[in-house]
Length: 224
Image 1 (cartoon, rainbow, N blue to C red):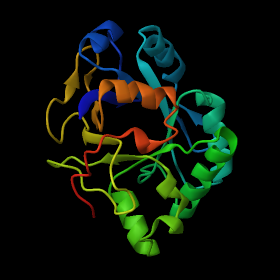
Image 2: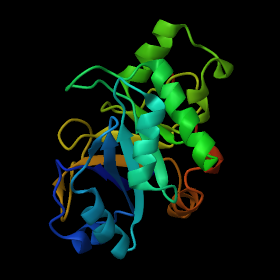
Image 3: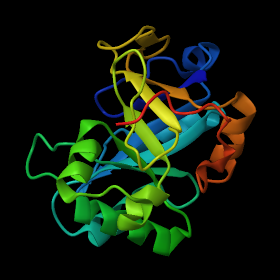
Image 4: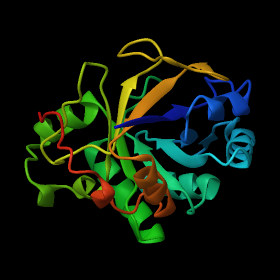
């Protein structure tokens, strides 16, 4: 595993991007959009800083209840199609949650436009949604075609049975979970393990996250 990926949003501040790079961070995934109208106000400037520092850059969309295709188009209009893309599927503290069906429609639309499925970021939300829907097989949901970014702050990740391994594991939100919780140049932030080597990480990014088949033979720590 490689502890070299962070994810940030307007809740974080990049004080010194050179320090971030010197801390061993290789990739940054930044919130781009939410719903059909919101754009993270720090996205464009932070993207420029991150890319100028020659760090790998990715973008995520926070899904909400509402037209999933319109959300996907909004996301792509901000993030573009030339980077790693992710759907953030979790409870919405500001309104109604994105449903499982809406998440499926969102990733389908991304695939239709870009030719590749985005990553799926989630924790208990996806596990509970799959159980509620009675989904136990790959063919029952298009979400199974997404590479998995699991959020879990215990000693090891337990993943839904639809996936045989995880690609990214968010092991801390900057407070809960295993240390380290901070990154020089930013401070406390979400940190992630990558299920592979630095060369595999770069290859994965170069492919736009098109396939999780790059993953090492390391199995998932456990399934739920």
